[in-house]
Structure formats: C-alpha cells, structure tokens
Image 1 (tube, rainbow, N blue to C red):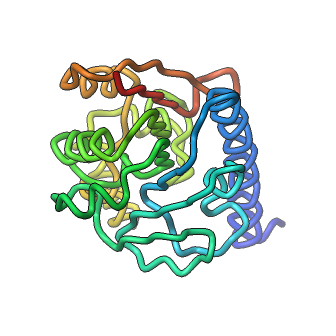
Image 2: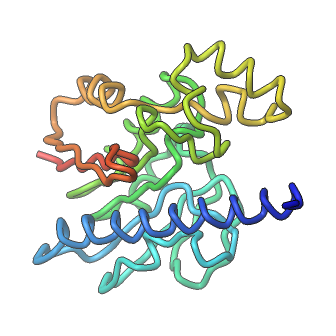
Length: 223
C-alpha cells in the first residue's frame, strides 16, 4: 500500500518539476524577444526571498544587463540586485521611486494573480507601465488550463470564482480561497485590462502543458 504522505510528496515534486520546465520555456521566449535589443537595465517585480532553485528563475536567467533592480513586498537580500525597494507594486510610487527604478525592461512572473482584485491587477499594470522605458513582460498561469498549479487540483477553478473559493476554504486551503491572495486570469482578462492603455503595443504568447495553454506571457512595448 502506498503511504498517502509519500504520494503527496511525490505528487508535489512532480508538479514542481513541471513548473520548472515551463519556466525554462518562458525564459526561452523572453530571451528571444529581447535578443538584439539595446537594453541596459532590468527590473523584477514580485521578487521572492525564497532561495530554492526554481525561485526567481526567470530574472536569474536573463543575462547581459548592466543593472538588475527589484521591487517586492518581501525583504530581498540577493546580491543579484543593485537596487531594491520593499513595496507592493499596487501602491502609489513617488517621483523619486519611479525615477530610480524605471528600467528598459520590466519583468514580473507569477505575481499579478496574487495582488488581489481586478482593480488591484489594473493598478499593478499601470505601475509597471510607468516603470517601463521600453518593454515589459508579465507572466501568469492560465485559468483555462485544466490543472491549477497552486492547489494542484484540476477543474474546480473553472467553476464560478465564489464557488471555487468556497471549495478551497472547505478543503483547508483558506489562504488560496481569498481573492487578495489568488485571483486567476484568463487571456481575455489581460486583454480587457490592456484596453486601459493607449501608449502601449502588446502581444500575448503562451507555453503549453498537456496540449493546453498553461501560462500566459503578456509582452508590452511603450510607444
């Protein structure tokens, strides 16, 4: 008989390996997009202080920038970053903060789904646009994928949000059940958010898992 804790551990390891592989694919897409560009500095939004191999994987693998910066609500100690600001991306930024952290490239991975309501997500994008000199890239899981990789549970995230959150709460995932902690997006949600910007050209790319689009990559360019 298989011990249930062994199953949970192995299942988590399996899904973590999948996530790691998908992030490598995302890095490849971003690297190709930035190839031959004249980019000097890069800003990472939503950096984590977690030191595991998969944490901050994207920013760690984007090479050849002269300056790396970080804005995060966590206290970041990594020596990768020459400038760090401990602040939520949904807060207001002073003119000095904008001037200090504005960068050629702004990257945010797996953050926009954790900042709260649709209005908070729009505020995040507005701040990202303000902080961008040339290109910004926002990566988030696709709510339309059959597997939800935060909870590791398939299909229930396709239910209406209130019902999905109720189920998560009942099964002991109270943190993920709150909108302020997880608000998943579909591609159309990002398209609708981007309708608020007149000075940005954008495209949406995807990586796939099990033939379904698992991650959304929003790539925006300042006009």
